[in-house]
Length: 458
Image (tube, one colour):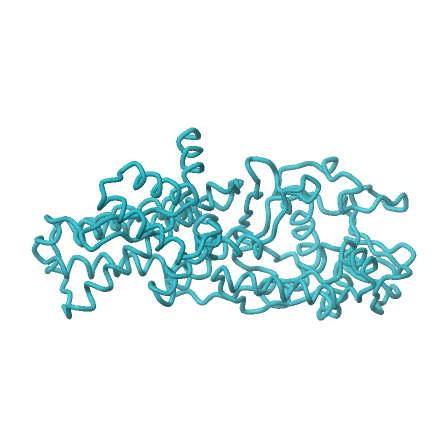
């Protein structure tokens, strides 16, 4: 699921709302059972292991933990009770230990996706079964089969169908009516359509105010899939890129749109996040040397306008379906203003400079906090970003410093061709050199070849 959706909780809490966030795990499923049988492992044990890995990934990406994290295997009683209610209300039927939802009994089916019944093709998580009254009828309960886990029920031993678990667990923690339901765009039909049908069949007051669905991840504009060999995990990505760079990259696309993953996009996000934190770190260093109490009327008019404009864009964009790309783009202006105040001759002489820096740093910090991108320490995250850059470049910091020394000597000896060659060699692998009166330092950058790709794409 998109990180923009995961920022919903922070944004709602920012407004003072009490948020109950439920993130359920499917630990009983056809694919899980098949995989567990291949490995000779208990399906519940296999699921638990993957759930724990997922939870670690969410921590890496600065996602807040849910209020509740129910699992199917722990909620069989609730699932069975809901199936009973659906049967009692006349929306389902029993066949030889199986229970199916009767689509024809729910005329509003398809209201979420706008699709028709014939679009619910048999075989796509909808079992082909000639016993069904309608090929689109879906399983609420599946009778036990050899080699599969099962639970006792009024219809005999078996396990729940895929859809019923979500309705039962959400009802258990949120009730039949709640505000927001999220998921991938591929779940709109049939999964979420089936959720609506069975929840309404169990309780005619069932209602969800907002459905939010995130787009697919593509790789170099091709859909990510194991069959194409372009599939990778969060853990593999953050081995080379900082988790906050990945978070920034994901938030740079609106959650409903497809996200195109590519090396150049990740490098650009890493470069951008370094710039943001370096700017704030430099600002923090200056402010730590001054103790100024900020009054609203003590900020210059142009700075006040910059702060107010960014605040307004943040509020309006996030309130308009979580438009995080707009917020991130709007952050450029206050960041540029901070750098002007810190580093330009005119900025250093500006009246009320410290008050201005304080106000600008505060608004950016507040927005980063809501977006889940505020690190505990600027200096710490900058060092981590440098380490990731060195790893991608397959070079050590000692080697970079030695190159800087060689370049300094070459410049001193007016060997400018050699000096330029050293700079370019480092730029090729994503290490940028910066010269100042105090000497030469380095920072991560987009590798030269990828920069050229960016220019071509533009």
